[in-house]
Image (cartoon, rainbow, N blue to C red; front, side):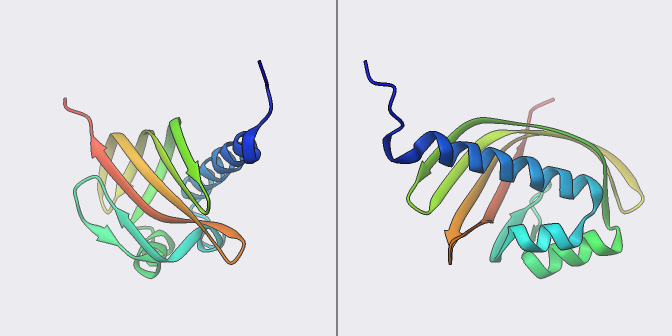
Length: 132
């Protein structure tokens, strides 16, 4: 039985896991500069209630404190990686202030990372709230 890593698949998955951890850390820290580096210019970021942001509007909301994360717990349950694209299926549980409202977020989620010009960037994020 071979334990070879075909085409560096394990390394690619580790890279995506690291990027996901960095993204969630930047969200928790409201680190606009770090997020700016990680987000694709054509980002489609869907929120738990269905509203969407592009990169500029998402970063603007982070900078203005429209949403502030107090804690975030995430998993990457499955990562499907191919040339230049990776899909992460996982969960995101968090406590956040959205405007004046404190929210408990409990989602299944899908994140899509794309490699453009040699750099991995988040191209799309789609959460689905778990039933309560």
